[in-house]
Image (tube, rainbow, N blue to C red):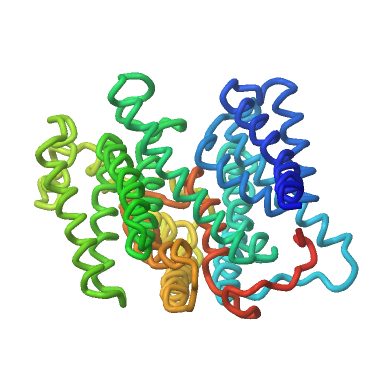
Length: 448
């Protein structure tokens, strides 16, 4: 009887395994330009209808590993198309389902909704500009679809098993990114001074920093020495990938996130272990990295000392920031409109120029709410060490992205991470209307 049950379980997983193979083949062979890619997208739509939670797991693989495989009609990517299909299927299910259409209640719903509403107002203000600039319009549309993943996934049934699978996939893809980055550097195959897959080093470093800090939280909660050793090996691979990403923002973000562990409500032994891990990584990097990486890191000191004339990148950013400040002064309350500021190196300044004080207030409230709910999730009861560790690492990881990366870059433009971030928030943060970590009632729209 047990063998039959196991056999049936394997058969239930065959469709998602087969579809995963088809999608990954489409990504690897660039079949998005051929019929194979179309078949894969249709199959994903069917999966989103009948097995939405499997579709979420598939998205968590597709978004980081196929972030910017472009389609022939502009600044649109295959991973984004899958997100659009998933959100569209959810919307149709909501419309055709009996009863009143309602979203699941979460403590983040209001700040996320207000932030989206401000962006929508800013979009209306820039309607003429966006219609004439299709690339910018598509970029903004993509952002709204990624943001909507928080509401869509929050509307599904989330049980401890599903939560665990999400954490495993997010951390696992981070380790895989680190391993691939190491392979590309040491074999001299692939991209140099750029991120794997999407050729943007800050995108790679953002993903490695985020998943790496989640991994540190997991290591702090796991009790098995073998598991800790395996996770530590993955963390080392991610650290090497981060070093060779040449992302100065990533260097600062991971250090800030690691230090933040010392201020969380964990035992002094765990705090000491995390700080020793940070110190060991810094010493190893200082001793082992090649001169090119050391020089890249040294420019952080140069900028901090105010010697910006030798750093073209930073001086260029200062010029763009001044333009954004000038735009804010011309319209301080609501800004000059979405996508009007051509800057990707400080999201706070960009927000201030494009959406004014209203947009800045909504953004800061959203960031504060995410960090607050992250602390609430960490303090909640969870019997699963993997989930508990991910919740411990979520606050440093979110701080590294939302504060450090947004201060020195533009996290909300990182395609490989945006959707993963919102899905993880929906899965890990406690629901206001459901008991913590217990089986939940099936919501209309995503019930399987």
